[in-house]
Length: 285
Image (tube, rainbow, N blue to C red; front, side, top):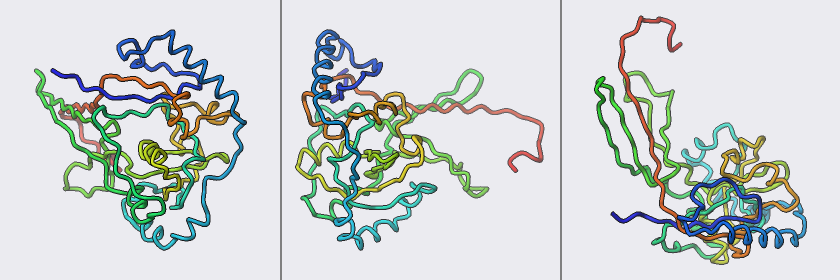
């Protein structure tokens, strides 16, 4: 059986995390990695200290305000950012900081066909386009105790099972599959501007020379709203350091390590157990 592989591009100018797939099996020599990381940190030290500047482009945002107002009426867009302070605006991708350490590309994947600079309708479509895939393989089995176990396998690492508590009684189970946000998201937090979602699109756009992009802008009130809380992201100290990681660093071979590793799949496990219990009239209120 052929094992699927992916290409990884990882930022190495900052302290490395404990990533189990960056190993000899992926062709990464620890001694050479230490030397590469040292060189990247030296290059980083030569960089001017980060100057807090807005990524928001007010003139371009004003110029396409009519297009943005129409796009902002989408029901899925409003539902995604319920309880968040957000808007649609044009930003400069080059001014964004990155809290994601790695980009992962399929070995056989080709660069996408991208809109031209200032083709605003097509750029808006790229920013808030179609929903992400929920394609999966379902495997189910019954245990000796007649309990049902279900596994969902997907190539989408962001696939999740969502609960919809507002589902009316008598309808199907209030559960649905969610493929992750399809939107190009930027967040402002504590005076700094971060790429929140859309890293692969940003990488390809910058490589194609497109640096101005209409996006969802979120004015985050906490690190949780920013979204930089997973252990595999850069931590808050690194993000607010004098020389934080930037999205443009992914294009700099001196600041990145490239290697190939085995592809991973998302697995969602569901265990269903049935029983009889005393009735509680207050339950569910």
